[in-house]
Image (cartoon, rainbow over all chains, first blue to last red; front, side, top):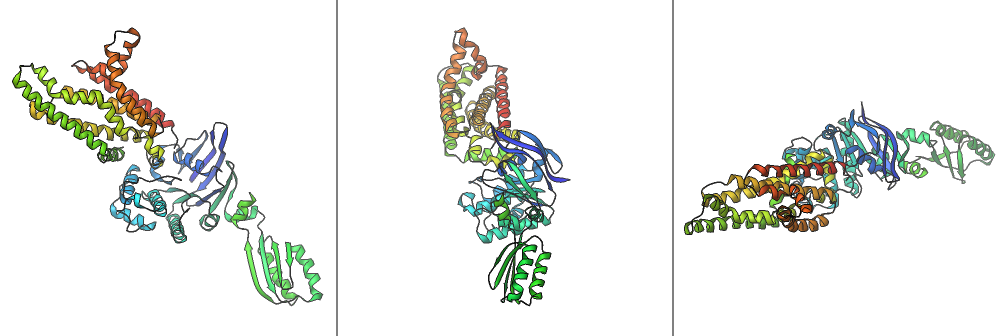
Length: 301
Length: 229
């Protein structure tokens, strides 16, 4: 059973198509990262799945239940974007009120535990109006998981948080995945998505232009691995032969007397290049390897 | 629905406006009942006239200012949540119908409690609970709350419902009684849409007012179902 399955899901406002017939499958237990520039349609897509907006056409199912369906709601947790919390309530009251709407009954101790998980220990009795932006963000995540949902939607969960809090939330998302939950998140932080998401989709102008695991995406973008070698001087008798050979195994060759940078398409080529330098009796002082980052892939789109 | 209704009910008491209105209802009920009982000892009145005398203060307030009171306290019961986007937390967890009826029931329970306490206060002086008048008052309040909920669903901006609420609150008793009392055939048919028409007789016709409230709530729920947040 898929956690999320959409079939040509479309949202239009007048003549403007915001989400353009997206068909997508998210497997159970994945951390699915949804990437795209502002206005790409990410939030609208989440809003349709979670009942905030209505699809213009197409269909979807969550956890095997065809949507929109009220039965789904108690199994999903949602942290919507740009949402304000109930300022007059304390954090604990907030969690108790919202979980009761999902049909779950949680005690004060349960709430304290959830608040500790998101890094809000000792803030349970404080009114939300006295919370900082970061604390509100964390409470937003807490309310999405308080009723123990199987599928969690997080819209920009770490934007505006300090580095320590971001790490804390990453650990929490990973532990939720280990508990068998599916997480569907959007983010502008490409490093974050690259680090914690198992599957990624890149959205542009209402369409998914590419999706897959990081490895699959790298393969799609020709899996470019850049090798930077620091080495001793290459004997002149070997230099020309070595350059000619390097041109055949890789591209974008850049050389100085003590360094060589080349882009190759597979990891096996790294060993071949090191063997070639050793064969030419050139001492290698340092090897640097960098793969195509998600940011570069994202910018390619 | 219960959680939303409970929150709405408790939130109503946190508002200074509601404290003033509760005080106004109770003071009016107390003094009108007290002076009516004195009046009963001075001049001879029939049983019906005595009942009317005891409840006249409270009924006057509810008939002429009830809509104003209800809209001033609850004009933003739905659209404030949409405007501040807290509605997103509600719609992702429960059905829109439950949200609407939860809100309505919270407000209704507040007014039911206030009116019930006021009638209890009157019953201390009159030595009886005026059930028919109480039921008519609740029917009128139910209609007024349904109208306010309908406005709050239909109009997304709280500032506009505040303005419209005051306008409707002031105009509705005037127009309502005009529709009931006028002989102009082009206007008098409108009395059937006015709750006041069904409250002028001391019989069970007041039950129709609950039907009018039901129509407004059904319309509100249909509009609310299509709303996006």
